[in-house]
Amino acid sequence: MTSTTPDGTLRHTASTTSIVYAAATLAMVATLCLPSVGRAQSARAACDKTDAQFAVTPAMPDNADALRKYERNVSGLTSDVSTVMLGDSLVEAWPKELSASLGAGPVANLGVGRDRIQNTLWFIEHERERLRKIKPRSVIVLVGTNNIYLDKPCGVMESYQKLFEEIRALWPNGKIYSIQILPRGEQMKGAAENIGSVNSELSRRSRELGIRTIDASNIACGRTTPCANYKSDLLHLTPSGYEALTRIAKDAIGSS
Image (cartoon, rainbow, N blue to C red):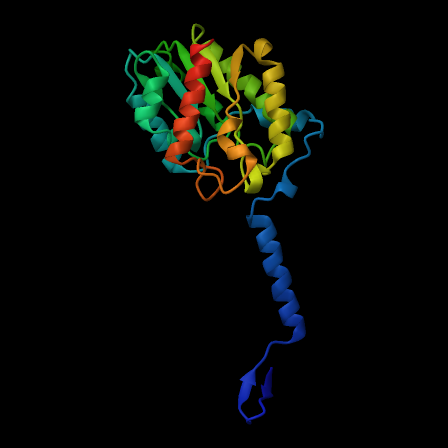
């Protein structure tokens, strides 16, 4: 519609209804597209059969670049690998000069960004024969932060249990070290209840699961932000963050 300004100029104006509709639409889009602590499943919610099925079903990654990375990672393996690293972007971005210090021999970083635990399961399932050719003495796992807003904590635990079973079947002589899900978000409150629930259960069941857990939450600057160990997204780590994480991991592995 149009209206006339005080100086007689015609101008176009939107109706009140149109403005309200547009605002509501934008709000809906923002709700759907932005991660929110409120959207995380309750830490106390029980898992049903569907949750359990989803948790343990290997899933192809959602992009072709991940498949290319899987192929590149596996094709670069050598028989003398002593330590394998599995996980998401937090593993993939681990500086090579630091990760190299986590093993007594060559360290193979097989991390792929955006991976959920189910994607790591898919990778193991589809590359099992080539992965069997190496005999690592230790396996370092850092994965799960991409599950925490999508799955119930009990579902995340189901995924972990399946993953550790697959790793033990693949490399029976390798010790499994699982770095607990790191704090994230403003004031490190992102899905904090769910992360705490999963980490606590992982630690409690570590012997049963055949793993050794590593609590690296001390890198989170006393759970205040901004934090020099985290990038501006408050999820990925800076060089100083990786230095701190490497020290914690080395101490834990050396004392086990």
